[in-house]
Length: 112
Image (cartoon, rainbow, N blue to C red; front, side):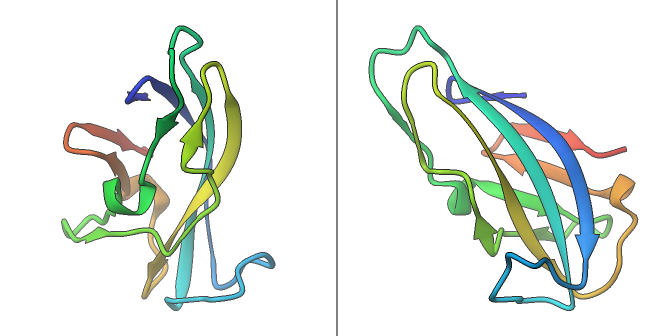
């Protein structure tokens, strides 16, 4: 999906009670969404994206969760690429295919 001149690809969605690189667990489980991102090379200026304020994981019940950990850098240079993840705290194991990743007001990606 595209958001603010950046193309995002969901590479993988996993769930665990702990990830070895997460030193501040916030929920009983964590849903990790691995992301690949590449900005438009025709841009003239760097782009700043405040992921914690715009990214949400939507649960089957409709509840929306903010990420507790974001490893993507908030700044993209024209034509720049990066990979990282969003970690979302959840209180129980979830069927990953029932979840939706939202970015901003209009972009939603179902994991089904």
